[in-house]
Image (cartoon, rainbow, N blue to C red; front, side, top):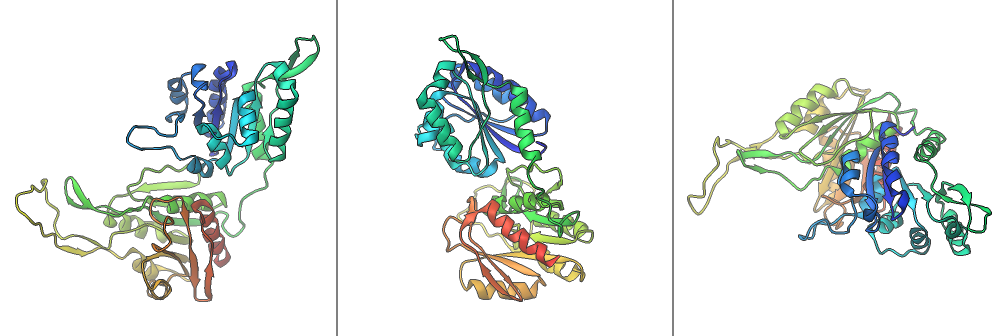
Length: 402
């Protein structure tokens, strides 16, 4: 079952690189999302524009995408993927993978990969039979990689050997068989429950071209949505203005921009949900008036009067029924536990997730987080982790209350 799966496809410099097109078609037809990472020599055999047309995603090859310092994060790819497939995989790439020679984007992505890795070798039959290649394959298998055996042919000596890459249809089948064999990830406590999640920032307009906002990327909220859906829940995701996508079919997304829009959507949806996780970084204030035209720079200062926005958490706390659950977030800079505990009581949360700007690199726009979960029963502290793993901790805690 490949529907909703995120696959990183690594392509290396082999004559079989053209077959990657058929692999991509097969994966997408089965419902997977594909991100191609190609080596520099791989581009000599197939053009990135062809691959991008098939995947509807830019092909990643270099560490830096532009001259302005914009770079591709191999770590983010390793966290994003449900599996990595390297097909075709040359003898050179096999050797680099086995020995940690991280000299291109594909190898660094492989070394950062948290998901299972599948390797489809493609090379001359004699090269495949060489003791060095076989030793590298043994190493990779011992690291937990899955080898998709190449097809047979005849060696220069006239004897039969292997080396030709397995056919694309069979490679896709291998991945599908792997996921079919995985134990169910459904959580009995969350199966068929309906969970509301807010994520990302809100933008409060000053004039047609300016707004008041914050640095939230939405990564934590989107990770929570994916995890809830993975565990069997139907998810109502209310997303502020972020550049993120969802992949799970059980996630139903409502896009909003302002606090008012998020408030209206949350009030409308919460009454029919079993729980809500309020992860969005909602603006506390908005301009009292919004200029209908762009404000010109005509004097040395500009005074903008602000007024409070709706308190979404407090309103849902008032609405909450005895069989509903409500989870909040507290991002603090000082007196963290005291402030979070107060918010827990005021907003009628079942528990609150605390994180702190003192933990550098764990809040806005980062791929990691470090949290404490505070409830009326006490406090649980967790180590720094990728946000996808933090989401699992939070959702598992919610499941215990359902």
